[in-house]
Figure 1 (cartoon, rainbow, N blue to C red):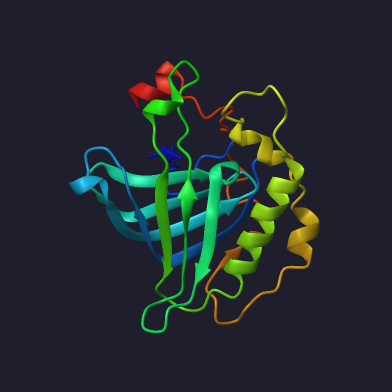
Figure 2 (cartoon, rainbow, N blue to C red):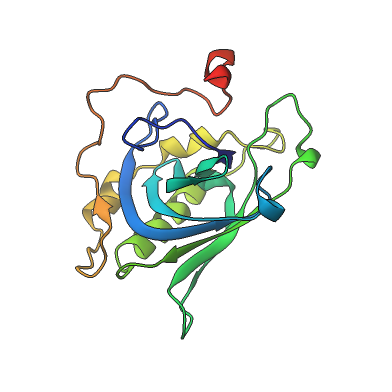
Length: 203
């Protein structure tokens, strides 16, 4: 997880090298815990979810305090579950491990729990793509012995997504937008690591 990842002015996340955006989904509510500086550490906001071959990014329509966006590497998500409650909207719940600087002790950072609630329309397109992609990322990125406690989240970019997307089912009741081409082809700006450079930190 990374709080407030870099975004373009239109709200689209700045991509990593070799990152491919698969879809975006508006009309969702996102809940996350253990956010520094927020009321009790818990944040709830409405906005857009972006899914790529590397990560899931929530971008809020309006900032909630200092919270504007939240970035969850697919390799760090676990315990994900699709919930269909009788009286409330369908949602995905799960856990995500924090991304922390290499020179810091991981024990200082705790696991976040999250929930994505589908408030507008169905989720018959989003759900199978999300679960197929996360399964494919895990199959293609088994931990390498001796890599240490934290895998590089950008290893997920090696996952082949083209074939999976060719066979994706599109639910007409689901307002998910699938990217047939990358949304910002004019931009050469690409991030190479989850660690911010000193220049990026000062922005």
